Length: 261
Ligand SMILES: Cc1ncc(COP(=O)(O)O)c(C=O)c1O
Image 1 (cartoon, rainbow, N blue to C red):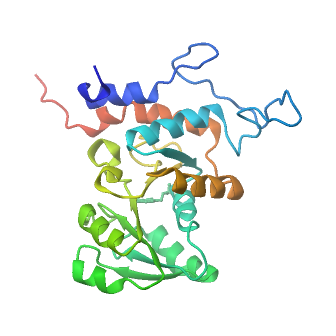
Image 2 (image 1 turned 90 degrees about the vertical axis):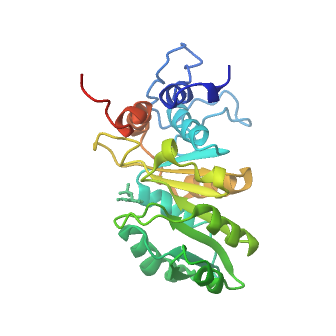
């Protein structure tokens, strides 16, 4: 039997349940330690400092990577911290195309902060293939979409955007906050990097802020990890545990309720 034979609810539980290697506990211990003992001066163990890696955060990051069918997952203090990290994979002189319907915080980041770092942008209706084609420049590195968008709920044709962007050697980043991996897996449609405000449906209880990234390739994952560790906007460990718990029951909150008998 493979994972694809199970219902979505069971798949989510199986994916997020990674028994603690030390005790077999089905729920990961909340490892509230900034620092980990090193047995050897020259060779660090798997963990040395929680900004760089933590066993509880690993369970969350591995879980979201599996749920999104990606290579590597990353947890951040907020959705905006995740989005900022994604944009920081760009460099001075690069150009990004951003879909015209985008969350206000993302709009603010793109218009008010990116220019300070020499990153150019254009907002384009990414559902208009001619407009999208016309927006590419020789320095366009990323097309950034959010579908459905907040607050207009405008839906973007992910496959069409991917086809056009990849033809121009640009990556596609997609904010999947509203659909969650239960209803939409952008990486399966060719997207290169998926983002979430985990604050919303994934956490599901309106009690924490959180952000997530999942990358398709190891190379992009390495670039995101470098920025996550260098900038340090990681998700607190107690909140990693709460987010993981929220994800476990995501399907039950997402399905229409059966009629009462
Ligand atoms: C689609 C979308 N992306 C990103 C964000 C930002 O997430 P956060 O509030 O966790 O920083 C939001 C917040 O409303 C959102 O709706």
